[in-house]
Length: 171
Image 1 (cartoon, rainbow, N blue to C red):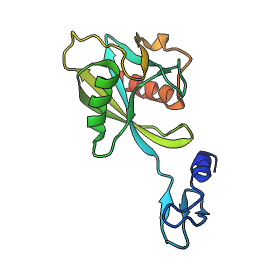
Image 2 (tube, rainbow, N blue to C red; image 1 turned 90 degrees about the horizontal axis):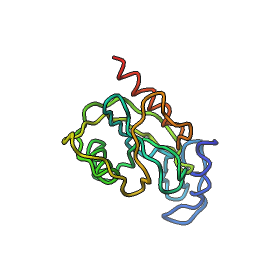
Image 3 (cartoon, helix red, strand yellow; image 1 turned 180 degrees about the horizontal axis):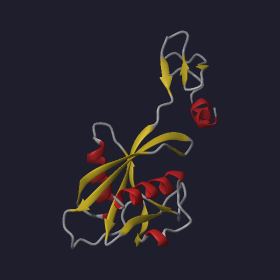
Image 4 (spheres, helix red, strand yellow; image 1 turned 120 degrees about the vertical axis):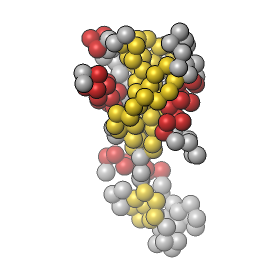
């Protein structure tokens, strides 16, 4: 139940009738309304931009994990595809115009107590002369080689994602 603790702490009463909810491992249900709510992961994107053998990482400007290094990306909004999220998030966080090159897989994680499912995309800059500029929730942007990757990574999925990118680049 550890991955679901926040979910169960948050959802104690039925949003429809106010009755106490029954708690299962991955869901809560209301006996009165017969509705069930599942603790599904929030879909998100992680974005890998590679240039001259280096990957672009972002230092977080906000909590959680303010000041730690993170892969670029963010949560998918309603009515948006994962690919649209990639393009929007890159523009919002770096000012860069990118196109999706390839999907590299997904990794589960926890963000502020809730499960997430970041989907990793490799992207290309539309204009190779553009310079990434920190925006939105990004304090700093920096290119890193594999041996320069900092130790203070924001989330458990960042290290796994970086390993996936390295494995892909070796192909």
